[in-house]
Length: 111
Image (cartoon, rainbow, N blue to C red; front, side, top):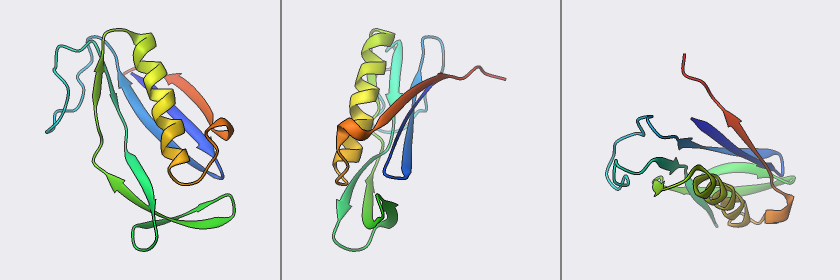
């Protein structure tokens, strides 16, 4: 399992790449279980009111969340690249420059 974490503006977003042989969460809309790599992460966007309030770059941002959109990939490189792009896109949706997002990838071993 890989954790893909983006950080910018004083907040973070983390999603998970499930690798070949690992069981990704099962829920409506999950990709075909035959996909060797599965990316799962929240999607969010800025709203004028309501939602959850986050402090981003010193300003309050109202954030609404969509259901996670899992995606299946054939290779690890494809999954990680899509994960990096997804994280940057989510920050852009709340007014953060995607280039300012620091993205890290961490391998997590099962206990």
